[in-house]
Image (cartoon, rainbow over all chains, first blue to last red; front, top):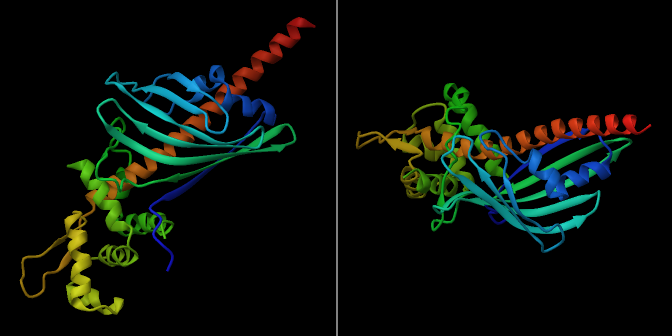
Length: 166
Length: 117
């Protein structure tokens, strides 16, 4: 039996119709990053730091679109290999001490001629620390409604994720 | 407290036996004896796991003192799922946004180059 690693993994891939050098710039230049670093439910953020080098800090204030405040995403870059790989700690909290997530993100860039494949892998640490006030941003409640019908699937789905902890 | 519940849910899910118990309960109510059988565990060992699950609000137990049937309480699981999926979605949304931004950027650049010629 291997030790319990309290984390969960996810992977998201996209192919962009742009050369790898340009796509790399999107992730490493604040004037570009600010335009797309905006999940649903957030307004355009304020980049406070984007020191893209190993050990460099990044920090972005992300205001909630509903005007009830915002949260700060921040961390430290680990690997910075131009046009190939970028990795960093990804923390997110707010001024009231609510903790939204703690993760480690690795983004790989792969040139496909004039296109670029981006693969984002994240290892999410589940809320195990009782000192932190873990919570969910509540802007989108109800979007998991579909699961309500099928408990068996829900448990299996979560178990699949949880298995990766082992 | 929803925050504590999220902590407790993941702590409970971190154990493979407890996940197996939840999976078993997902298909309906079961007594402790019925639960112990497939896991090849003693009743006290199963009870220990059930206590953790009960503490996390993931299961509820019937009042019948003899049988104490267990059933799954789905609310904390849904919260955990929502937490996980929210994070995944936030990346998918950002990457979609990056695609839109890149297209705009390249369209503008092309226009600019054409004007220069």
